[in-house]
Length: 371
Image (cartoon, rainbow, N blue to C red):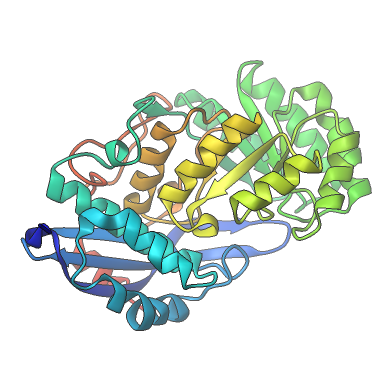
């Protein structure tokens, strides 16, 4: 007999723009605020589940308006009247008849995960297979200023707060300046810090190889997405000549992409984002595949609130390894519309406790940020 109390009775969309502490400048584009879509599911027993996903044409090809339209016109009729406890079956059915729209799927996946957890009074990490760990090391994004001294100062202050993993945005300044910045980072942060670089598709093969060979003496953990996506042969050429591991981000939108990159011997690891894969449930599946393929894993986000960040922390705690850390979206925000934003303690972030995602949104603050 179906659980009538768990039936989904409504879904509401709340498009918003989250202000940032500072812009994120990358080699190929710049982010000045965080366009996100919040959604709320209600069940017959009065429980609520919230989801969130950013709109990013480069990562998922979506806009806020498009995400809201696909949820209201296509997904909503397939949700209403269904049990939130059947979330896996619901998502499988929606995916089977829908091309792309992975950001919209992410918002729905998170809301279903949150609602099911609250109905069952269990944590999201348990619904994702159970916790392998309870704490995760954040990977801080630094750089984009074009000023090596400024970037090193930023990282040094964070290192003093207990953080141990850093990723420098490169491709935004002259190559020699960025090579010098990585040398200065290693000298300032010490031998035990994880230091990586991310070119965001900004270089050609020759420049990428020159960079990797120049920074290899500084113990760089990996270079992420040096060349443009859509052409595995280019990133494979870099990997073949590079003395440091190459990671893929913009190139990975499915488990098939992971397999194609491994077949081409193009990467040593991958950056997994929920909006590229269609939710944190899909991220967990991809994390298990990466580990089986011998790939290191970085879980990454755009500029999202503590709600979506909580979901990614749950995912990071449920997969076999996160060797390349977890990039946290909420740390960039000047306004985090939840009642108790997630905090890092001693350079780590704990898996949220409580049912569902473990975060309660502040509807008044979301309304104030509406667009």
